[in-house]
Each structure stands twice: as C-alpha cells, then as structure tokens.
Amino acid sequence: MKQLQLLRHCTVGGIRGFAAQSGKGSNVQSLKIEGITDIIAVASGKGGVGKSTTAVNLAVSLANKCKLKVGLLDADVYGPSIPMMMKLHGKPEVSADKKMIPIENYGVKCMSIGSLVAEGDALVWRGPMVMKALEQMTRGVHWGTLDILVVDMPPGTGDAQISISQRLQLSGALIVSTPQDVALMDARRGVKMFAQVNVPILGILENMSYFKCPKCTEPYYIFGKGGAQRTADEMDMEFLGEVPLETGIRSGSDEGVPVVISDPDSFVSRAYADVAQKIVRKLELTRRQNLGPEINL
Ligand SMILES: Nc1ncnc2c1ncn2[C@@H]1O[C@H](COP(=O)(O)OP(=O)(O)OP(=O)(O)O)[C@@H](O)[C@H]1O
Image (cartoon, rainbow, N blue to C red; front, side, top):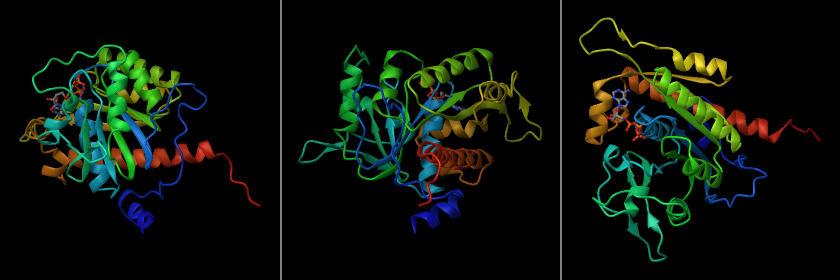
C-alpha cells in the first residue's frame, strides 16, 4: 500500500528498509535515531539564501505530495526560524519518560533547537553545547516512525556543521544557493565539507533564481541566473531546479503558512514538489548503489 502511494505521488519505489550509509567507518559517536529511515540535511554555505524556506516547503511537500511520514528538525543554532515558518506555538510537551513530543503542523512533526533556549535569550552556543542540544533533539524526542527527517542546518561550513553531519549519519545533503558568485563559492565549500564526512550530495537548488512579479508577463532575470546549474555540472552533482524570488514565498514564511500549503497548485509549489520527488528518487538510487549488485542465488 505504502509503495503504491509512493508510486502514485512520487513516481518512485518504496524507500523503507535500508540503513543510511554515510559516516561509515568513522569513529564519531552516532546519534542515529531508531525508526527513521533517512535523515537529510538542507544546507547552504552562505546565510540568508533561503535554506530554511526550502527545508519547510520540501518537508511539507514530502509529507503532502509524496505521502511520506516526515519530520523537520531545526538545527540552525544561529537563527532557528522553523517555529515561525511552520506556525508552531509554545514549547514541546514532555512525556512521562521525559522525552519531548514534536509539534505537528501541515502533516510534519517539528522540533526546533531554539526551543531549548528561553524566548528572548541570546543564542550563544559554545563548544560541546551544540552537541548536547543535538542529542536532546534526537534521542530526547519521541520522533516515532519516519520515512524522512529533514534537518535545517546552520549556514556555513564550520565545526558545528561538520559534527552535526557526522553524528546524524545523514543519508544525503541538499545544497541551497542563490545565483550570485559569492553564494555559489560558499555552496562549493558546503559540497566539499559533506564530501569530507562522506555524506552524498543529493543536489543543488537555485533559490531566488529570477523575479516574476504577479502582473508581469515576462520574468525579470537576476544577474547570474543559471550559476547553480553550472556549478552542478562542474562538480558533477544533480541540479534540482530553480525557485524564483516571489513575494508569496516570503509572506508565507512570515505568516507561518508555507506557500505549498497556501497555494499548492502554483508554479513555485510545483517546483518544490518536483524537488521532493527528485530527492526521494535520489535516496532510492543512493541506497541501491550502497547495496551493490544484486546476487541471484
Ligand atoms: N524564493 C524566495 N522568494 C522570496 N523570498 C524568499 C525566497 N526564499 C527565501 N525568501 C525569504 O528570504 C529570507 C531568508 O530566507 P531563509 O530564512 O529561508 O534563509 P536561510 O538561508 O535559512 O537563512 P539563515 O540560515 O542565514 O538564517 C526570508 O525572509 C524568506 O522568506
């Protein structure tokens, strides 16, 4: 039944039953979460390129279009914005066994690392604090059974990002960039960082690729458009598509109603659904490659 649903909505086969392979051989302590098939990172080299916006719209698309069980973990220690973007109110409840219960909205179970900090307090994370918080966000949460946990990473390529990638045993990472050279340069750094910790790149998405005002017939092309496609070609990664700069995306984020919910049949919502579909397909392929050739007995 599950497979049929996936075939219908995402045109790929079932994705259950395989272990994530990244981080294999490393001696870093894993925070693998029982019951979660794949953990994927949404990352960017540069801040402000639309990483959290992508994580939200991707997670909601995976849940609603692909009919998967999806979780969203806000690990952006520098600026957790998932609670606002997903309209999550209050703190997560704590169960009798002292584990936190994710807050669910739009069919996605959400947890934000920001909920560990009192509202209004400065977000000052030092050394092992990030890892302690990550442990609470993984082992200390009743995630239940999930097909995919989408992780909104902190922007950049420092120690925190490397440790999070290793500890979570990611199945793959999606890189978000705007078309500008400065953003793409940092996106390349991101790709290299994930290669260092043996995390497969699922592809790169060009966000704010061009501008199309609601009343214009022709889009306004932003200087450098297509840069992510060229970067993908040069670095031998999949180009996942382009999402234009649209006021509906920004207002949806601010109001806590992702555009894939408020306007599910719009051009941008279809673009996010397409990315979700590509991600599911890529995870399936990665898994098959990791399994090696089939043995017929
Ligand atoms: N395609 C888009 N069209 C219009 N606005 C967008 C688009 N993508 C993102 N934005 C807006 O840009 C701002 C930054 O986006 P977002 O918070 O997702 O970036 P980010 O990369 O996660 O930032 P950081 O990690 O540095 O906090 C937000 O106000 C968001 O609504």
